[in-house]
Length: 121
Image 1: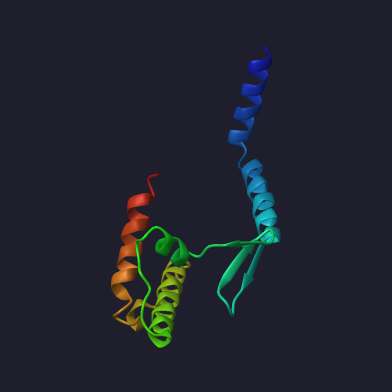
Image 2: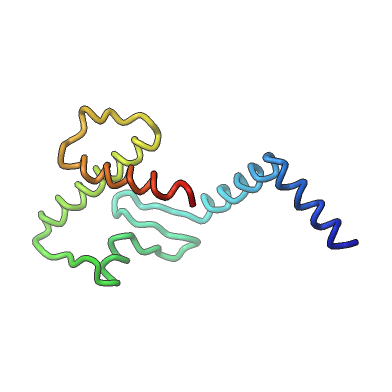
């Protein structure tokens, strides 16, 4: 009997989209409270602890090696930011692809392919 009541409650929750919307909003608010971002240093903190960047993780596992002078590294960082912005604007459906730097296009195409291939999961 108790199992049947829990199952019935779960079914009601599944059928009620507002339940999940409220849960998501609560979760997002909690995340926002714990996340801090230093735009100048391009660093994140979660509840006071530093969070490694994607680049940090890729270096740690040996996927990339960052070498060169500071100028080269800064250029690569700015390029990465431009690619990220292009994917973000694409997701928001406000990217004007005709004005996109042709060097960024292959990265955007990879992003589109990834989104298309992963939407069924």
